[in-house]
Figure 1 (cartoon, rainbow, N blue to C red):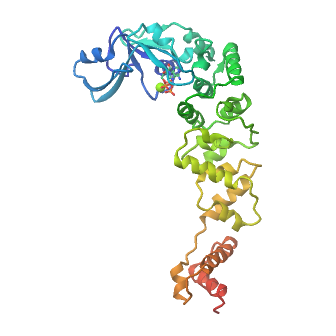
Figure 2 (figure 1 turned 90 degrees about the horizontal axis):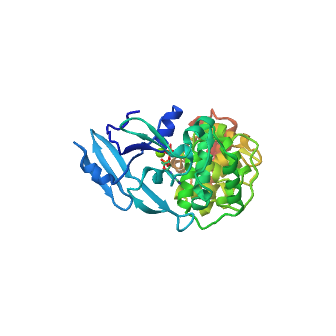
Figure 3 (figure 1 turned 135 degrees about the vertical axis):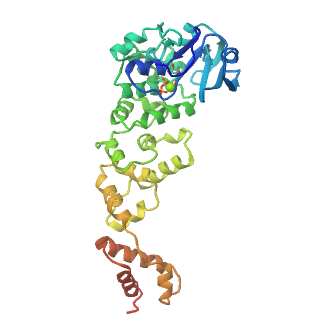
Length: 367
Ligand code: ATP
Ligand code: MG
């Protein structure tokens, strides 16, 4: 691994990037940390332009050979307010103290940018080998319950499992949740986890009671595979299809679009339909995500398929202008007329514009 062209005895690759290399996986972001003051170090790098400095966190962004690199100073953290952002304690602390603030042992490995040697203070190498997720101390989930969702994400992404003690710590926490937590951070982790589109993740989320982090309402797992429907229809927002099925999701800071997806889903979820027209009217104008969510209540896959694969593709050629041209004054009858033609078109999608106009005439009894 030689992802950043920087080599210094105090500079380490750290966290996910080291883990991913050991697992033979590609990393999305590269974290490097400097034992000491990163911004002082940045000033000494030849040909580097300093773009941004954050003194409170001890981080610095540089431009080097056309590449932006974030360098963090080693830092220790405490959680005076459990479940909220930590407070930075000591910028420029030892590598060991920096490592000890992290979530799982597999994310607590450091690799020297100078020698390539890996420093492992917490047994992360062994845990990677054994496919184990282990927190670094017993207060870990109390300090930051979003780690429970991070754990789920890594378990699914890498096929790892919690060690017995970590499992127990999670159960203990989920039995005694402190709801005064940062839902912004929780949402970010839920998003990353459920965007993986994994039924297994959802099963674990429900069966292990992880959903209790944001809602008290129980939930029954759908019988059908959510991931297959998502793969087939490729909605843009995957995570909300899973998490939005649970009542109480609104406590998360949802975007306007996510809110609409959930509220539209709630509106249609208990409906049953007697005709194509009813299906069409219920789904027309809704986001794809809300429609897909409907499939998972009482196994309604066939209904959404009927809509998405057939009904939604049917278009009328006749316009309001065409009706007006026949000498009919605009009124709510126009909509009834469109529905009448649509209904015919559901039965016979091959109808052309001339035939549609004939149907308009029939509707208004002008033939
Ligand atoms: P990904 O591949 O999803 O980016 P990652 O492990 O790199 O996984 P990041 O969110 O990029 O995760 O965080 C980088 C590192 O910061 C982690 O490897 C971990 O050491 C530490 N970290 C991140 N979030 C937390 C947290 N909530 N608690 C403790 N340490 C954390
Ligand atoms: Mg990362």
